[in-house]
Image (tube, rainbow, N blue to C red):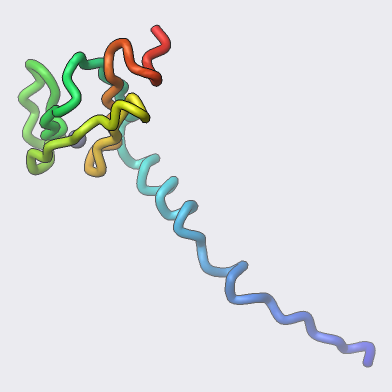
Length: 90
Ligand SMILES: [Zn+2]
């Protein structure tokens, strides 16, 4: 059989979820890292004094797990780092 055809595996043709997530992230501004002394914070994507509704998202409450020291906003990918926590390196 010289004409052996190699079948592409479907898994190689479909972009992985990770690739999709990366592509989506690239269309957005670089995520910010925000340090906060509170373990419970609200994020609406606009930030302090930055009332740009176009960049915002519905307000969500995030809870920082003290063992993790940070929480990521699922909407805008902002990372909130607990001041003095395990993830606070500066
Ligand atoms: Zn957010």
